[in-house]
Structure formats: structure tokens, C-alpha cells
Image (cartoon, rainbow, N blue to C red; front, side, top):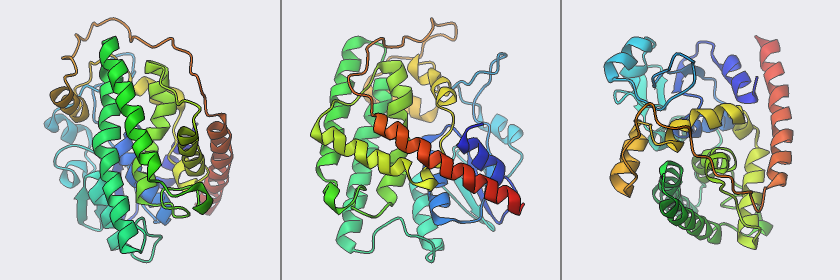
Length: 316
């Protein structure tokens, strides 16, 4: 059992604050990290969103809204009318969409650690670059993962690296702290860390993506290492192998999720292949730089989560 799965087991008991999630969804993981960072008592509710073939392996072929309502008789559709995670139901107050949920948690629980810094200028900077990550980094990630042609993949890789370099260029100097704003682990980290996790798993597996061993990319590695050491992030990390398999529908372009449809519509990604399409085309390119420091940091963080899990169980 992964540490993320252990967290789910601990957090599935009834609470006034209900969190509608899917373990594999990076958008929902944002809110999951925030809930753990704020140390709020919440109930984790796993939602079924996609078709499952006879062999039980995951797909990204969306269920209809009617079918989602039938398979999730837990208040999910009442909270999330679009049928997408994440969603929060705080004693009847219902919100959805990841960024909206993050702002809601800051405002509804002002006594918990705040995701946005207090300084107005720093708050504005975080919001600007969080939006940049959403529009440039994450969108390009999906174009790269879903592209089936070598030329389009090469272009997407260059665009992704370029976008990452822009982000790294505005991070606080490492001497001020490892995070985007220095010492403050907040909205930027919560928003971006789930995709950085997927760079080193999903994107590396299917597209041979790796970071070059440059000063700027080393700064990103230091940032991610610090995120891995944060218990709130480590508590949401699921099995690497499960995460890779779960994203196979993006890698072979059979996915029909909202993200997949939007990616095709906006980025010229080819139309979906047939359900009997050939096996996934994984890249055989050897990574030029594997951030071992990230892996070692993650191990330490996960051990702390294991201790937290035992504590929760003993209290239950």
C-alpha cells in the first residue's frame, strides 16, 4: 500500500468537511495537499469517473453524467454538477473547481496555515505565475503526453522546457528558501507539485522526458525536493506504477476526459484512436538526468507520513 492510499484509509471516516476526489487526478490532488497542509479534519470520498474494462485496468474514457450519478450515490453530483473532481461540501456549503476550492479553504479557514502570502505584491506574483503554470506548463504537458507524432512531441518538449525556464527565472533565490516565494510553502507549490510528480513518472515513462543538468533545472529539482519533504504533499503520493498505468489513455490518445477533449481542440492533437488501437508507444530514450535527490527526499517524506498514519490509526 502506498502512503497516499494509507492517507485515504485514515481519512475516509465521516466528517462535516467532505472532499470529493479521485486518487489519480492532479487537479484534485491540489486540494488534497491543501487539506493536509492546513491540517483540517476532512472526509475523503473517492469518486468513479471513468469506464473500467473487464481486466480492471484504468481508462480515461468518461462516463456520462447520468452514469456518474448512478455510480456515486454519495452526494458527488450534487456538489460537482459537471461531474468532475475536486469538490468540497463544508456542512452544506458546496464548491468545486480546484483553484476555487483552494481560495475557499483559505477564506473559510483563516486560522489554518494560509496558502497565499500576506504581502499584497507577493500574493499578486504567486497568482500571476500560478496562472502561467496553468496555461503554459500544464497545457503543454498534456500536448506532449497525447501527441502521437515525433515532430509534435519534439515541439511540445521544447515548449515545456521553455515554460519551465520562465517559471524558474522568477523563483526566489535559493538562499531565501527552496520554495517559489522562499520559505513559504503555498498556493504555487500546491498548484504545480502534482504535475512535477508526473514529470518524473508518467512523462518520463511514456515520452522519455527528463531535465537537463543545468543550473536552472537544478533549481527546479531543489524546489521539488523541498515539496517532497513536505508531509502534506507526501501524504497524497500514490504508487508510481498505478499512476503510470492510469495515464495510459492519454499516452495512446484514447482518452475522452474533459482535459483530453480540450487538449485536442486547442492544440491540434490527433483524434482518438480506436479502442482496439496498438499498445502504447513508449519512448526508449534514456534520461540524461534523473533527479536522484528527489527520490531520496521523497523516501524521507513518505516515512514521516507512515508515522502520521500510525498515529491516526491509534487514535481511531
